[in-house]
Image 1: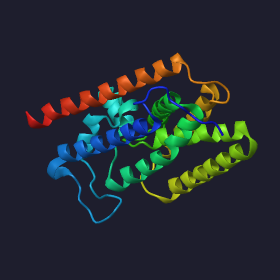
Image 2: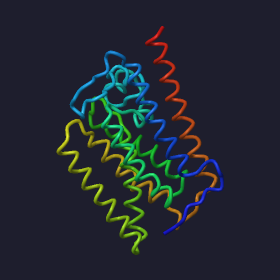
Image 3: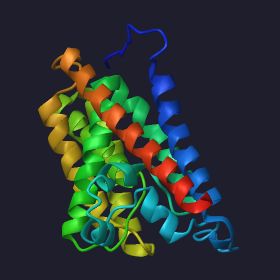
Image 4: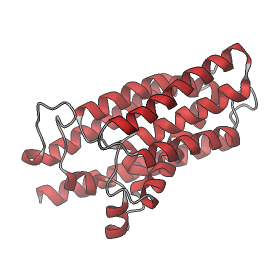
Length: 244
């Protein structure tokens, strides 16, 4: 088992994971505020605190509709940070809190963020080609982290590798079951994220193969900069669209 250490005292795995969770939560809160009276309040847990679809559209939801109608290709990035209900974001953030530390330990902090971002893009891109009308959620990126962990466990072997592989394989089976049993699940996004995660796990390599370098840090910084700029832009534009 490798031990991941970050030389920057403030940029710790805990800080990065919390920043990702807070960003998701803040975007969810903003989507509810912008929705106002159009927000769905329901006793059904699957629909409780559901933002307006119009609000999710201009905040960066992806899918066939926004990309074809508005050419919103940037939504391939922003959709990874939006959620359609309280239960949706709760489950995804619990999953992120489980997966991110594992991937950061074995791949490094910067490669983890790059994998999350790129597999999110891959999942939403496949959703577009699969004619998914509208889609949001961190699930594509989370499936990417599962895919990277799956590759790590299989590639590394040994007691630790077998344990990781067995655990992540169990998550894959769970994803498949959820995809067939629960409504409104984007299986295209899950599948695209998972496959991309396996591929990127192989391409990027993990710590026992190579340590993170300046290019990994630069890539993660670029992805983070683009992501937060797009999210901020959509929030500001949405504010003026609604309140002016």
